[in-house]
Image (spheres, rainbow, N blue to C red):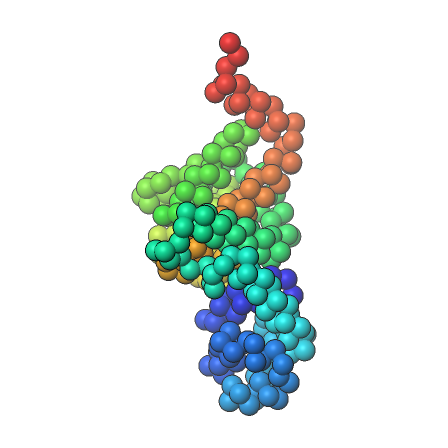
Length: 286
């Protein structure tokens, strides 16, 4: 199993049965006790059957409960180290934090999100997305709020290597741009939750036109992910008033950077020349 077990449990909640959700909640809330339990003890503590515990383990990607328990022990060790390094449980920001506290907490949790995203990223999906973008005559990238800023970043990067990429900021302009796409053009949709109605509408339009749709989202089981042809999943815990709310953007940017580099590699000579030309354009020689 790759990635953070606690992040996996948080993301899997919506797709679990009621009984499996009880086991997942037990794992999250009483993890220190659960790590020493047998499958029978976990089932009894959650009030479910042993088969339910095994099903949850397998739905999370483990061969069975013993493997999950090993990963739980490792996750607890990492979390203890993280709390020691960050100096705060779950990275909560406090009005009493010093400027050093704020900087260290933000740096730590943003780095953690990037590392977890790298561990969990589907590399085959990344290369499939890069191939589609490298071959696309036109690319439209959509996102709202903070995800919209990430969309603009990808658009700017692709433009710098000579790709015909567009990242409109207005929702109507996004729909207009996607409405004009046709195969083998590509639409990229960025949404942390994968449930933003406007972004889903844009992807629905792209799919109706037969255009390849790439989703970048933190929830691989979200409506957006189910609509997309290719999904690139980030790993960040975005919690209200906590540093995780900043981490989601960093995780998205990490995926975008990896995607951009893989596209540039496929047009290496042309991309290198384009980067040199665009650099010289804004840094003229005296």
